[in-house]
Length: 152
Image 1: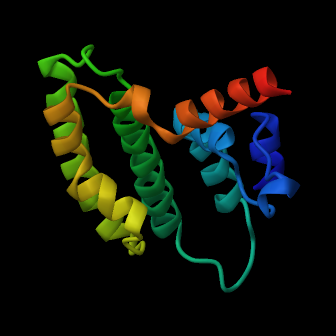
Image 2 (image 1 turned 30 degrees about the horizontal axis):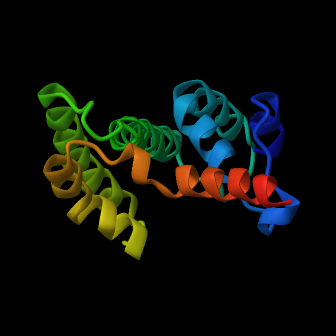
């Protein structure tokens, strides 16, 4: 799996506890279809007596791929800056959230506070503010870095 991800220049960051950082997560989401095609081929090639069935591998790869593609749709709509949101963007966001709830539940994944916030509240926040992309954590972090350079 790691070699497949590294082919897409996605790797766990040591400084991030050996997990994917935000940039790598966004890259993974944007290339999920190609990556999961390779993962599926790799898993189907495994010859082991306790390996799950081909159908299980295919269904799981499709499920996780669909979840990541849906997260990518949501992320792109959440990143729209205040005042730039269109009705179509909001409709795509709302449909994607409904889809992600279904996929997340079927995958048996836990509903962490971040996922709860996304599934339960982000559409209302985006709608009421007309976009929240300029209020996200990465933009605030960037401003912090710029102000720190100015102060130094």
